[in-house]
Image (cartoon, rainbow, N blue to C red; front, side, top):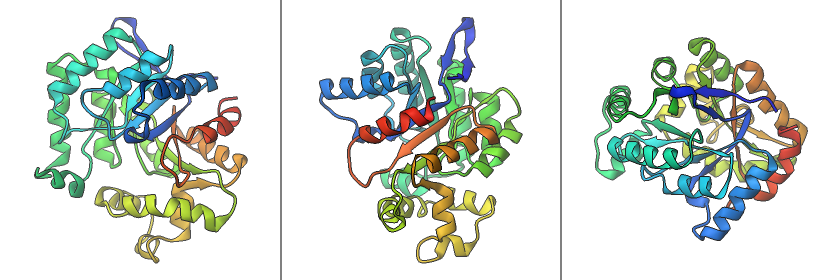
Length: 298
């Protein structure tokens, strides 16, 4: 399998590969043995990176996953710049990366106003907040190419290429990937997230994906980006969302359908695609990881 290399100072490299998996941090087992078993299987299947949404600044989960594996990369997707202090994230980065060199990618991002404001913080000037957070990481000697930035709009995508290894866009289409690559140019990492549902029945696929899509379409950062890349108000409000929007954001169907969507991202300029499997159930989608691996990692 071809690999995407993110070069670090002193000849270090973070090898994220072509395809990784994306999960929420809170669905990983709390039992250390169960966590180790899941992480080990993920690596044995051939996935090169695991991305963790809702990541904490202490990086404890990422440390446990790296300890349980030999070559798997752990990437945060993302650490929220409003809720996780940069000093803590930097100290954790140094602790974990010193024990597991070349295997930790610190993804950061501004999150979303409705969620951040629930914590009692004001969500103002998110771009400036991300810049200030990157400045703090600089001051704490976190290497520029040991971190990535969640990016949707042109300004933040450009920032990601200038101040980090590259961009990690979430809830996007191959068309967005193409635009992001044009903005980044050659070199910076481009690692979009792609939701998939291994279900060939349209109604069942929509049952599985509806709640997730409803959640994200309630967040202005995502809806603004979807408008920017060509979706209409009808797409966003047709009883919640249109079939066109659902099919564009979630690759559902058989293995061939799903692998074609991943290939479309790569063809559009992605170095790495973060595959988030939706099943409608809590817990890690280990059965689906097994089913997808031969098709995605050949």
